[in-house]
Amino acid sequence: MHLYIGVYICTMNINDFLPKAYTHTLIDDSVSYEAPSNIALIKYWGKHGEQLPKNPSISFTLSNCKTTTTLSFEALEEELDEGYDFEVFLDGEPEPGFEPKIEQFFNRINKYIPFLRQYRFKIETSNSFPHSSGIASSASGMSALSLCLMQMENLMQPNMSIEHFNEKASFLARLGSGSACRSVNGPLVVWGSHESIEGSSDLYGINYPYKINEVFNDYKDTILLVDKGEKQVSSTVGHNLMNNHPYAVGRFEQAFEQILNIIPILENGNLDAFIHLVEREALTLHAMMMTSSPYFILMKPNTLQIIEKIWNFRRETEIPVCFTLDAGANVHVLYPESHEQRVLDFIKNELVAYCQNGHYICDSVGSGARKL
Ligand code: PMV
Image 1 (cartoon, rainbow, N blue to C red):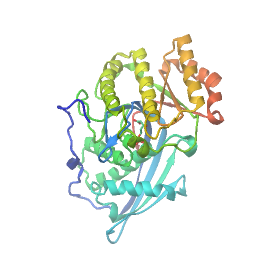
Image 2: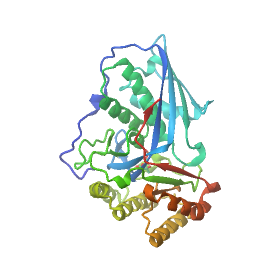
Image 3: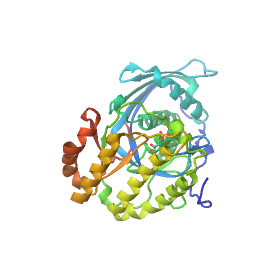
C-alpha cells in the first residue's frame, strides 16, 4: 500500500542492475570492505515482494559498530550447474551456521551477479562488536559482502561509475537483509520511495539529499546492552506480522508523514521535535509487535527503567538526550556531541546498572562503508 501515489522520483529499476558484458577476467584474488551498522530514526517494519519496504525509513549510519569482510575467490574450471562453492569464517573460525543465510542471499542475487557459480569463495568476516551483544550483524555483514561482490564486478567492468557501484551494492545488500541497504552510505540514509525525497527508491538506500543541521554532525549513539541473547523474533517473522495487522494501514501512513516531518527538523536542528519524532517511532515499532498476532513484548523491565531514567534526566537537565529501540530490548541513547561528557556520566552513574554485565557500546554517526 502506498499513499503518495504519483511522482516517485526513483531513477533506476531492477533491470538497471543486471550486469553489462564484462570486459576483464579475474582468476584468483581477494577484496576487502568494512561496513557499518545503522540505527533507524523512522523505522522499516513490514515488507512485500522481494525485500521491498511497505514504508520509507531513514537511519543514522554508525561508525564503530561494523563488519569487516574479506572475500577470496578462485576461478573454477567449470561453472557449477547449481548451488555455490563457498565457506564462511567468523573471527578466523569456520562458521557453517551462516551458510543458509548466505546461500539464500546468493540465490536472490544470482541474476544480478552471474559469476557466483564460476568461483570458489572464502568469506572471512569479523565484527567490531561481540557476536553475543544482541546487536544484529546482518546489516553490516550483508553490506560488507555486497560491497566485496561489487568490487569484483568493478574489476571485471572497470568503467562502472561510483554512483552505480554504490546503488548496486545497496540494492544487493537489501536482498540479503532489508535494512542492510542503509549501511553503504552515510551519515543519513533514506530507503523507500517518498515523493518528497528526491531520488528515493524502494530498491536501494540513498544519502539523505537535503540540508542537515550541524547539530547532527557527530551525533552520539550509546548502545545499552540490556539483553544480549538471541533475538526472540526473527526479522522475517516480525515483518510478516504486519500482514493483516489491524493497525498496519495507519502505521504505514504515519511513516510516510514522519518522513515529511523530519525534513524541516533535520534542517533547523529543532531537537525537541527530533526527540518527539524519534521516541514516538521507537514506541510505535514496539506497539506494532505488542498488538500483532501472535504478540510479543520485546522490551525488558530494564528497558523501561532506562527510558524512565532518560526522561527524568532530560526533564531535570534540559539536555536533549533521547532513546530509540530496534526489534529487541537494547536501548540506543542518542545525543549531540556537545553534551557527551554529561550524558556519559549519567549513563555510568545511573544506567549501567540496567545493562547486562554492565556492558554498553559508544558509537557515533559515521560516513559509510570503506574499501580496505
Ligand atoms: O533489516 P531487517 O529485516 O533486519 O529489519 C530491521 C527492522 C528494524 O531494525 C526493526 C527497523 C529498521 O528500520 O532498521
